[in-house]
Structure formats: C-alpha cells, structure tokens
Length: 484
Image (cartoon, rainbow, N blue to C red; front, side, top):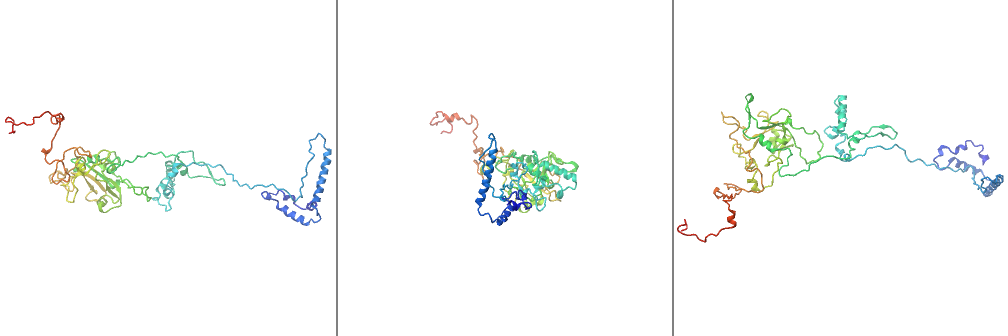
C-alpha cells in the first residue's frame, strides 16, 4: 500500500483540505480506497495478515521494555491499536455555525401613548390633500416639499417648532444599524412621542341637569341685563342709536378645522362661537368687554347644512352653515338648570315672564305679545345677511313711535323682562291663586274676600283651639242682640 501511494502526487493534501472541513468524511480517500482494493488480489487471509503485524509490534514492545530501567515509570501492558490502512483516516466532525452574532439591541419601550395613537388618521394620505389626515400634516409632515413656505430658513424653524410640540423629553432614541453595520436614523416622532409610559390628564365628570345642558360659561342674566329696556342712547355725530344691543358678524366666527376626516364621535354636534359686541360696553378688537357667544347669547349656534324650513331665515340672514337652537329656556342662576315641576306649578310658580306667554298662533305681534328680547338677522336694510343681533323688546323695529316722538324706547311694544314672584321654580305651590276667566289652570279661590288670612297670635289663637273654655249651651235673651 505504501509503495502504491509513494508516487501519488498531492496525496497528503487530501487530508485537512479546507473544503472537507464540514463534511462527514474525506471523499477523495474513499475513491482512492476503492481503486486500491480493486487491484489487491494476493491477500486471501486478512486475519493472518493482521496477526502477523500484531506479533511483530508485541515483540518490539518486549524488547524495548527489557531495556527500560526498573526505576522508570513505565507501563508494560501497552495495547496495540491497529489502523487497517492509510486510506482509512478518522475525521473530526466540524459543526456548521448556525448562530448569527449581532450587536446588542437598543430600543425604547413604548407606553400608553402608542395604544392611544390612531394610525388611521395619522398616516400620510395617498391623495396628498392637507384636508385628509389633518393630524399627520400637523404633527409629522416635514415642513418642506408640498407645504414648504418657499424659504429654507423658515421651513427649518417650522420643523423645529413641530418637533418641540410633539416630543416628550427622554434619553434619546439610541443608535440603529443595518444588518451590515451601516448606521441610520430612526423616526424621532415615534420614539420621542409614543414612548411616554403614563397618561396624565384631567376630565370633568359630566353632570346631566334639567333642561338644556349649556356650557358652564353660559350666563342668561348677562343677556337680560344687556338687553334691558329703556337703556342708554348714543347721539354722537347726529345719530340716535340704542346701546342695549348684542351684535355679532359672520366674519368673526371662530374658524372650523378644514378637514374631511370623520369626527371621533359621529353623532356629536359641532358648536360654533362668534365674537359678540355689547353696545353699552363696546370695545374695538378682542378686548375684555367683547365676549363669546357661548356666554352672552341665550342659545346655541350649531354647525348645520339645513337652509330651508325652520332654519330658512337664519340661513338667509346670517349664514347657510349655522343653526340657532336651544333658545326657549325658563332658567336662572349660574347653573341654568330647570327644576322639576308639574303642569300646575310650572304655570303659576316662579320662572321668567317671557316663558309663560301663551303660544303664538300667528295673530300675535310686537304690539300685543310681550317678549324679553328680539332677534334681528342681517346687517341692515341693504345687506340682508352676514350678522345676528339681539335687542330689547322696546327696540324701534319694525317701526318707530309717532312723528315728533323719540323712536326709542318704542312705547307700543309689550315687554316681559322680569322674573315672576320669587323667581324659583318650586315643585310645590304655597300661595293662593285666583281663578281667572278662560283660565286653563284652576286656582283655589274666585274673589278676594274668600281668602282668610290667619297670621299672628291674636288672629290665630292656637291655645283657644287646644284648650277651649266652657261655653254656655244657649245664650238667648232680650239683652243679647239678634238672639230673639
């Protein structure tokens, strides 16, 4: 075998070649072994061949053992290990590395803000319209490109403001690398806005009250005071203008968000606010004396597309996009809550005069129907739209007084500007009520002489009732008047 391979070139390169590192065996040796044994035909007894070489090795071991000194550390019974031939070479099994070694992962733990983030309304719209997904344009869109101001420095400042507005201060976003080790930048918005682990906010528990649940700043007493009859008059520059008025123009309406996104609560009504000028305390601009309609107007202005029917006059006189509602309220106090009352107590106990006038059947006018105020629509006789105003019941409209008299206050107008009795709308009645002709609500007496007042210790002797004295059974005689 040794003679056979003595002249074979590169035989020793077959062992340890890198290509065989992860193989189970040496493929080249297997092929050479097959070729060699194909030519060997003279060895018929393999055991005889093996025994011969075992004897030869044992003999050599015994000879060497006799030459070793007795004091040497020598093991005499060394066993022979027979390798059949040079073509059978054991191979170490290398395992293919299946584990991928990567750098340590660095990231930010997301919190409650990520769960509250609505992706549906906060991703880049396919249409590219700024009216779609408005929050994305406000919080995430870079201030260049389609929404650029045209000035690089201005866009840079706008981006800085956007990042400050939408970021929560933390330890940073860390470093990010691709699978080949290239560093890249991650989205700062995601890691600096959605990583907040807590939600700190305050909410008022809604309190459902009787009547219309207005905003807390609504003040109907402000309206009554601002529109009280017989108010001051402006006569400067040869004019005669009553000052107890409330006026608002459509251009002063608070702008709505220009978006086509569906609202969070589809059934929720959108309230509109407008700057209201008070004639008696008029002030130009956005001064303290100019108020919002949510405070000074005794009704709500709701965004609406109805421009016919009940809202036709408002659409023509003010704007086709608003509606006046919640106007008829018999309330008082800072809470503007309507107490519980039955039909009888609602008719006769407390409340405001204007809210207890019979229903208008179409024949009433300002000359025979008392009111607390008037609502005027439009700027003037020439411009019939664009404004809404409130004036007192004695405002000279639609006509003034007779010629020769001052037009204001209008003497023929009927007024109902006071609260009845003690104002409070109690659920019970504790006073006498007189019957009236044609009254639909029954009282408890017809004439004044039917009312018996028992007030005080002399008029109402309680002791006489509890301990009555002995009274003669009969008092008849000539000396007693009208007993005979």
